[in-house]
Length: 241
Length: 322
Image (cartoon, rainbow over all chains, first blue to last red; front, side, top):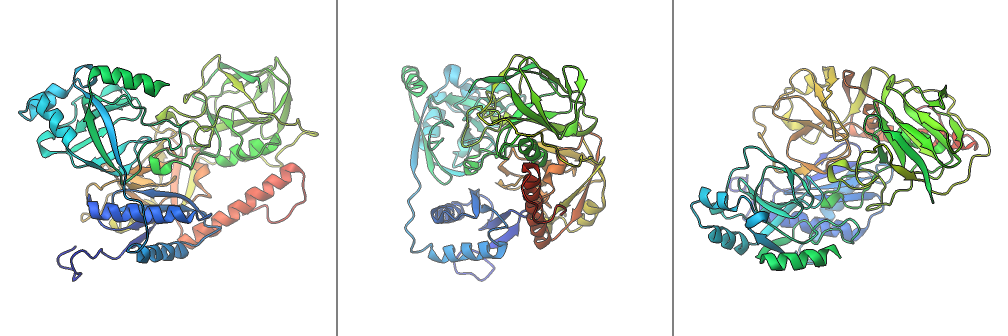
């Protein structure tokens, strides 16, 4: 796709629509991990959200797809597809808020990042260099899922790629920041997990009693800011209030 | 609001469920909710509640429960030999209970999950607009977990019934569950195995839970040109994942996106049926087109509405059979 299908550069491929049961439509805007495609998905999701269409029950963006969960008694599949095509035509002129930049404070190493030294040794780096590289990058949230608030982030420096643990931990604390292969991310909730843990954020990322329950949305950009253990303790206390 | 039920013995992992939460699917919070929402709804209607009130979902082996306040209760779904103070009682029927009464349910004899509704509904706090328990995220329901001995469940306010209610028929669950399914969204990667998928009889594996039903049977392979893995895409309740081992996993209501190839989601009007499949039961898929799946969705909604009117004692309109 792309170079040999006759489209001018920068022109997105035609949208494909897929049936996902009797109550969902999946629109496909490209393939794989592509920031331009993901941005198109984010912008279209924002436009659909803005409609507050009574027959659309959920708008779920992912890497290169957008799912609309709908009530088939209220709207037809073909009407939904037409609605999305119509919104695509408005993309160039529509006013859509830019993705937010969300900063996540992280205390690296020590008890919060038991695998920091391993990640450093695996990549022939000092632990300080791991922290510097990890907190220098801006990470796009390509998708949220797997667990509430769990972000699939793009943009991990290849010098930090590290395989998963051979044996997953039975419990990883909420807020843990880890690396698995070419991915990095934060565990919003305590769970079992096989990621190499390099730090932890004191923020309560997923708070179902808060509106919105998470400080970020799909398509936003995350940055990690190194903090001291003392800052961690102070921010953790504030977050618990 | 005060405690109305006390769990004396939990049985096999009961949870509190309603019709699920939709508010935060885009943030990775799955809908959850009663797997057999038909039995859940009927239980509520039998005690005069709305369909959205929270019930107890009780898989495989039922609990023992002490009643702490006068109420109407109803147990629907799997046949579990309901007893009150040791005396056998009918299911799919409202039952007036008094403080000190002990309800006991045994092993599922027909079906897999029973539902218990109580006057006013089980009144745990709503989380993101629902009382459903999401075990994977430890949220909703009763402290986000399976119920345990000693748990005290509060119930909402509601009038007691003026007259008992009963469903005039007793659903009998087959040991071969037939699920109608609409090819897609990766149907184009299963051209060689699609017919085999729809011809096969699968067996429900014991490694099944509220997240998904693992099915064992003939190998369902992706076409050779299909990618081995994908970036995650949104999934729906009823999505059938085909992992590398070719043994399908029918996803229920506890996942929002996934990275496996998927085929033929089960139609919404049939998904409740898998909630009554026990490990070892047979599962088959029957292909329907989108238009047929949506016609069945409409018929199913009409059937539910007619059932609700019937149980409320109101006038009968519309078909009772879909």
